Amino acid sequence: MTGAAAAPDGNTSRQALAAGIGCYIFWGLLPALFMLMNHAGATPWEILGERTLWAAPWSAGLVILARHQGEVRRVLREPRTLGLLTVSALLIGINWSTYVWAVGNGRTLDAALGYYIIPLFNMAVGAMMFRERIDRFGLVAIALAAVGVAVQTVAVGKLPLISLVLAISFGGYGVIRKQVRAEAQTGLFVECVLMSIPGLIYVVWLHHAGGGIAWRGVGPTLLMAVTGPATVVPLALFAWAARRLPLSTVGFLQFIGPTMSFFVGLYAGEPMTPLRALSFVFIWAGAAAFALGAWRAGRRLAREAAIA
Image (cartoon, rainbow, N blue to C red; front, top):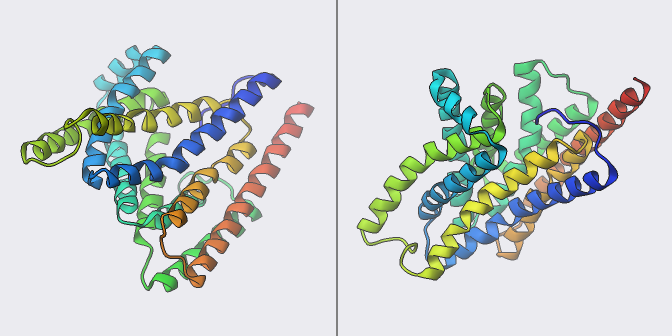
């Protein structure tokens, strides 16, 4: 998250809070959108391919609005920066494909578990790689999440690989992006362009082979086109809100998405055994400890800023 600007007024704070809530509601409802596409006949791989294609022009729109065209040209001339963004594009591609596959195969609850783990995974990676300090709330959160994953392993009889792949790929994505010398909009655009190349190859092959639902009617094509704004708009809302909201508020908000996805999965009839429910209790407890720690840290920073 980029550094905050000057303290916003009350109206701006309310707008930032609304934008933050909005972006996580977008993310929480993505499984419902993917389920609708599956019901229309799209495979997870078609959804992924179309998503990369439609996200590219929308991310280009963000670059134009932010007037970062010059930065895009700079990034394309810097091999190291372009190389890092290629790695981050690979990681976010793994994350997207795993998520879309999970929803398409009735594993939305596994995906929700993964996104609960991500902030706790990021905390652990920050301590190991960047020597970031973890307070006692963070240690409790990580321990509870670890117990939750262990209980989930017992409940399903194997490691929750979908959850772990989602957490590790997105956590790794964050580590790479932390080292990229580029604004969020620029990086997202370059990543989307890189991912759109294999996406275009797959979509062309799919339609040449007689498959796919997009481009075979206005309705299916518009349905697939929604993946563009559904991917880019929440990222833009998040980038805007994160610069204006306290860390403690962001810490609370980031659990809205997986909670909504969790209930979407339940509504879709995915199985929930008592032992599996217990694993989510541990994960939720870890999330609560994380949020409490972020809230306390935010209050401490606010006090220190007031004294200064």
